[in-house]
Amino acid sequence: MQVSSLNEVKIYSLSCGKSLPEWLSDRKKRALQKKDVDVRRRIELIQDFEMPTVCTTIKVSKDGQYILATGTYKPRVRCYDTYQLSLKFERCLDSEVVTFEILSDDYSKIVFLHNDRYIEFHSQSGFYYKTRIPKFGRDFSYHYPSCDLYFVGASSEVYRLNLEQGRYLNPLQTDAAINSLPTISALKFNGALSMAVGTSTGQVLLYDLRSDKPLLVKDHQYGLPIKSVHFQDSLDLVLSADSRIVKMWNKDSGKIFTSLEPEHDLNDVCLYPSSGMILTANESPKMGIYYIPVLGPAPRWCSFLDNLTEELEENPESTVYDDYKFVTKKDLENLGLTHLIGSPFLRAYMHGFFMDIRLYHKVKLMVNPFAYEEYRKDKIRQKIEETRAQRVQLKKLPKVNKELALKLIEEEEEKQKSTLKKKVKSLPNILTDDRFKVMFENPDFQVDEDSEEFRLLNPLVSRISEKRKKQLRLLEQQEQLKNEEEEEPEGKPSDAESSESSDDEKDWVEEVRKQRRLLQQEERVKRQEQLKEDQQTVLKPQFYEIKAGEEFRSFKESATKQKLMNKTLEDRLKLEAKHGTLSVSDTTVGSKQLTFTLKRSEQQKKQQEAEKLHRQERKKLRRSASHLRSRPRRGRPFH
Image 1 (tube, rainbow, N blue to C red):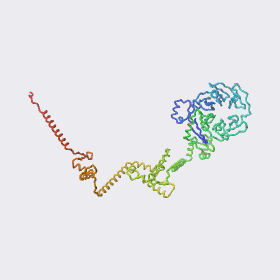
Image 2: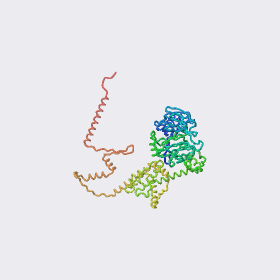
Image 3: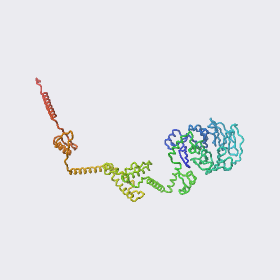
Image 4: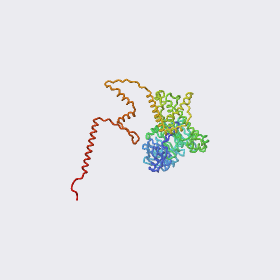
């Protein structure tokens, strides 16, 4: 689907895209749809809505269900059923069709005017009757009350064929001169008194039958014959078309409403009744389908177009004119392209021309090789100005957590750069959020950089803080001078900072180890200072009170317990080793091994001695038994 806009009127082209030849098999068509994106994305509103070579005329039946079109080569007529969105039938003819008329509400009665003076009648089943008129015909019309067909052609007479009697009536003689200019090329009535006349020189004249002077004259400015004229009653518009353009203008003032300029020349235009759809017969195999929502709703058989266009309006895309560059005659002289005037590369529009944007950039690059660099610099400057406008503007840094605020400002600038590149929505900033206002006002929330947790979690904070301190000094100087504009401190570019940050991330482990070593040294210094303080302190006598329900024990036992509790682990282990309850030995790994032995009671000692005696007695019995087995038996010797 292709969208164009003129005077803020959207025109949706439903027939744009590549057309596939008829002789291709269904298998090859499916293969092309998989490979080619343009073929896959095209909208095929009506299946096979095209002709082999050229479409000459197109009309809609009165009931709106059938669309009939004639074309060549070979001369033929095709009928499309809108309810099925496909081709209903196709009939080949003997000669090309000048125009045709649908006499019934559906496709059951059709009259064709051929370019060889023949008039051909078709019924629902097919060909019905064929007759001839004296002169070559140009157009005809059917008068329903009298059942007369009126034919006009290359003479001053109007031929009448009565379908009820089945014979020709006396022709109507007129004073029209055939060879004079301009000649009438299109005519359309609007009611009983008003009509529009299109001339061969490109003018449309609106008449009231009660006057011989035109009410309004509209010139197409192309000098081409007017092909068709239609009235649009809901907006009081007139649709006039020549071979290049379809213009829609107000019938009272002549002011342009919008215009439609297809890619190929036009042969006929049909306005689908009571809707905003326009059908065109072009000098190409494909017939045009255009939908203009302003003119009216979509027809009932394609009502989904309303929802589709509404979604497209919610998410607007680039229009047709975004691919073209508007240039004046002076611009063409500067580029050296004046010889292209009148060629298909330039389309005349108002006081200039439209040309393909790709051709414009190529020619401009050849004429001015440094134009791209200038364009690039302008784009970079615009991006920088946009980022400066989106920065977090702070007149003064907060009293609390100045370095944190500066860090957040830098992160916000980096996020804005990334959002511009990736087109991602930016998140709200903490500095402008009222929920975090207290963090920069209350001194209780001041970050303690000397704490152990801060130093372990931020091992690289020392390097970064030095940079921020320099920036803080510059900002404080700016605040003292009361400058409204914030000047960025001179320093390294962003690329250098990013490279340094990557090097810092590599040294992360080493920095963490250094911080741990420093913390261990500080702990040792604190312990030594604590020992010195303990040695210098003088003990004072303390009085003890006996709690209720406890017996009094000597101060000697409590004093020994107190001494043991005050002793270090090393002293206590030595004391236990003297008593024999502890044994220390070295292991193969190089560490110490401690073994504790508990004190045994008298009963346990007696039990162990009894077990020892029992084991000794059993050993004696085993020895005596083995001695008896080893002794030889007494008896007679062998001979």
